Image (cartoon, rainbow, N blue to C red; front, side, top):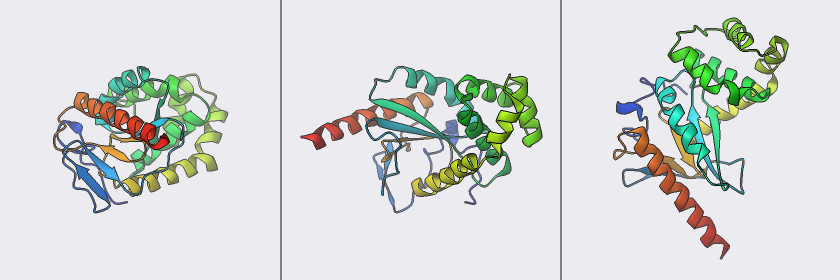
Length: 216
């Protein structure tokens, strides 16, 4: 996918606010787009909100604290899943592998905020596997365990799957939130990340109501 992110795209960092969508996605008002066919979800018994992101993206860094707080106050029927994107660019692919490797060894939650801070506040140069591994080891992670995960088939598969999901959703950039595999949050009416999360709440309610109606 030859789509470099223009600063992760758009004014206020809202990649989806100014994007033009393909014919397979129907813009609804100015708040969200319907994805058809829907993306697969990993938690069919819950309303899954997927964040497509990159540690390399400055706008993802800005959204991260608010999204973490948002996720913490969700009811039991809502779950947040993070999908790191590669976008066919070396730095994004490198940091996506970092995310999936940390996730594979159970260190992602502990180090998620630390990675963002290292890249965007501390100026840590994570430019290749060697520098990434050295930094991770400094954070108290076992070198051998991390290296095996970083170079594993599982991590490569996760990155490939991420690329396919990005293509299916026709994402123009990150951060991007998808609710229940069907609703891509974003549009010209959304001017801030606060508004982005408010619309996400509305779409979670919409998905919940639709599920309830389907059961009757």
